[in-house]
Amino acid sequence: MTLERITPGTIHGVGLGPGSQDLMSVRADRLIRGASHVAYFRKKGRTGHARGIVEGLLAQDAIELPMEYPVTTEIPFDDPRYNELLAAFYERSVAQLREIADAGRDVVVLCEGDPFFYGSFMHLYTRLQGRVAVVPGITGMSAAWTATGRPVTWGDDILTVLMGTLPEAMLTERIAQTDALVVMKIGRNLDKLRRALASSGREDQAWLIEYAAMPQESIRPFREVGESVPYFSIVVIHGNGRRP
Amino acid sequence: MTLERITPGTIHGVGLGPGSQDLMSVRADRLIRGASHVAYFRKKGRTGHARGIVEGLLAQDAIELPMEYPVTTEIPFDDPRYNELLAAFYERSVAQLREIADAGRDVVVLCEGDPFFYGSFMHLYTRLQGRVAVVPGITGMSAAWTATGRPVTWGDDILTVLMGTLPEAMLTERIAQTDALVVMKIGRNLDKLRRALASSGREDQAWLIEYAAMPQESIRPFREVGESVPYFSIVVIHGNGRRP
Image 1 (tube, rainbow over the protein chains, first blue to last red):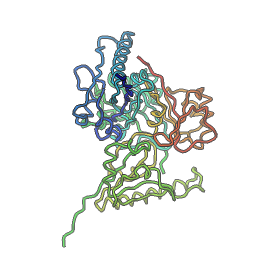
Image 2 (image 1 turned 90 degrees about the vertical axis):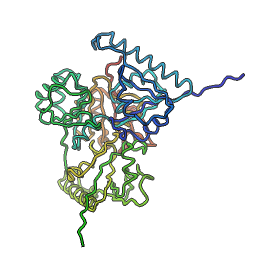
Image 3 (image 1 turned 30 degrees about the vertical axis):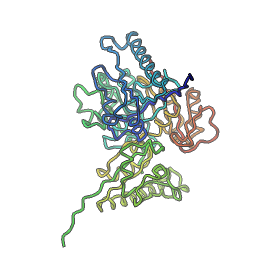
Image 4 (image 1 turned 135 degrees about the horizontal axis):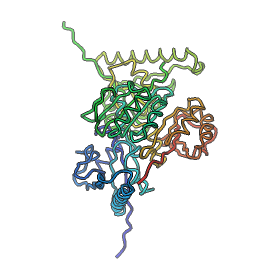
């Protein structure tokens, strides 16, 4: 009897782009169609947005590995147990991915947008150092400014990307200082963001884009936004640059 | 004799992504392969980088429309004649694109990276208001941070995108204030950028990526950069965010 040496498989972190299937890259499309194993994050009991984007692309015999976020709604974000729960979840997910790769199979991890630009994928990536091939993707913010039908940056415009989770004073200061602006993670921070846009004198220049590049896409002036916005919402202020 | 009414064609502004053919979107790939008319910017006497990216994709009978930048090397950038020359060039280009569309044909304008994120395309776009369909693309900066093998932004990191053409004091201030950083248009501004990185105390955190996603791709710590860098160079400083 001889022992067979197994060549480890590759773990691919693949950017899906902003949500429309044909806005993923040709490389991502090829990897996903050819994948024997496909992993993705999702909330318990949901299809998962990433999985939704690739509907109809997966091989018939592809093995799916949904990675379900632990239920943490009863634990506040600043509770150390929240971080502990998430860390344990990422460790379990990484162990599963390693197992597939150690058995000599490739696995594609689906990542909304661009894998290295915010998002959850990097928590797996840093735990798999050196074993992951990353495919960049079109970001949600690119889809958002494209939806507005106006260029976001010109000439030597400064672009600042902020998360709505930042403190109000910092949001106000940074919004006042930049030429072009993108704000993500708005959700529960909508009122704070509204005050920051008003205090910085830029509310009239801001646009809210919901579901960019998805069928429900909508664009309106930030001033017309009501009490709540969906998770997939991005604020854009366009730069003006120099224009020949 | 009856007069035939011609339905105007569509002008597509198509993001090619950072330079690797398979990093363009599936939608871009489909539009480019199917295009009867393909337009792109280039310098006089060059193939043009955008045209190079689509080599082998165009239909055999595709009609190419190179838009050659006027020779302006003898005129300094801050001379009003520079802007006049460029404006006239954009007007001529737009007239050609309109002519094709008015004849009922579609035309694809090739754009490096993302059409609305810096670059020259918007100077055509604003002159063609309402007649252009834009396809977003993977930005050069996404390819650059992907090349470093490290996520660029985590949690509530602030990302600032700066052009090397900005004044040194502004570069220094903004580099000091941000979590994650991208600097583009480095070229002749290399020494100024080096001083700004040093003054802001962040030179040791900076990476220089040349030709991201292209065959000559190279990555090194900014400290190891010599006297000059190629046009396709991007500086990245990674954010650190919160990490469960």
